[in-house]
Amino acid sequence: MSLLVIGGDKLGNIKDNLKGSGFDNINHLSGRKKSQKFYKIPEKTDVVLVLTDFVNHQMAKTIKKQIKSSDTKVLFAKRSWVHIEKTLKEYRG
Image (cartoon, one colour):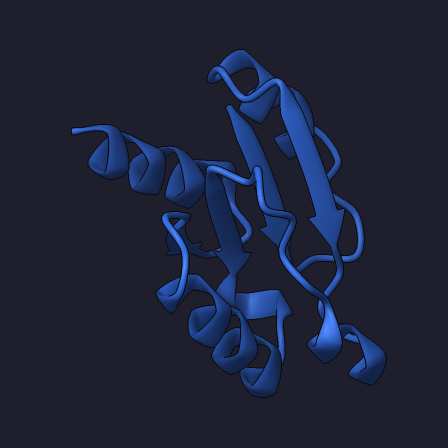
C-alpha cells in the first residue's frame, strides 16, 4: 500500500513503524511551506495521513478538497506513534 504523510519536518522512526505496518511506498511532505498548498496528491496513493499538530490549516483544507474527488482515504493523527497506530487500527477495522 502507498501512503502520503503530510506534516512534521522529519518522521524519524515513524517511517520505519509505518513500513512495519504494511506500507511499502511512503512519501512525506512537511506541509509547512506556502508553495506546498499546491501539491497534487499522486494518483496511486492509497492513504493520506495528516499529522495535525504539524500542518497549517490551509494545507489541511487543500488536502481534504483533493481527497473528495478520489478514492484515497485521509486519516488525521497527532505526530506520535501511539496516535498514528490507533488511527491506523481504526481505519483497518
